[in-house]
Length: 136
Image (cartoon, rainbow, N blue to C red; front, side, top):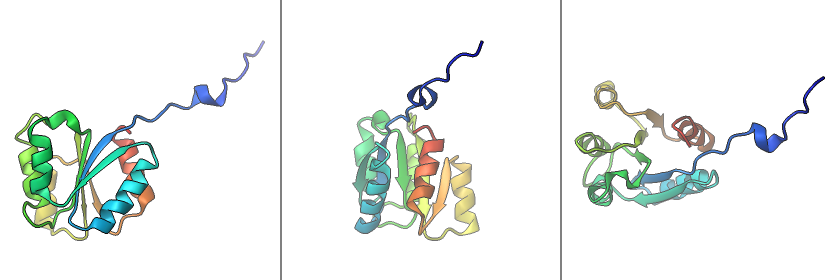
């Protein structure tokens, strides 16, 4: 005797909605990223640089599940932001999204144990996939 197949809803696991902070000085990229990730049910907040990201995270480092940062930004760079995050009890994941990265900078991010590096221009599907792999 065979048992009936489970309904499709029972076979698929729901993805967790993540709270994501995205630091990038290009408003157009922030909007594209917001659209790409919010379509998956995530909540995205954008800031223009590392300094603004630090201000958002200073009071409660656990308020965001994922921080996505550009490398080249005015104020505080992505590397400065990630270095600062590693001094906190930040429990989330970190993705660097950049147009270019020297081998030395790439190695600096790897030493800081970032969870991913995405090169611009990134396809929205590539970013959605990376976020999904991180737990979303």
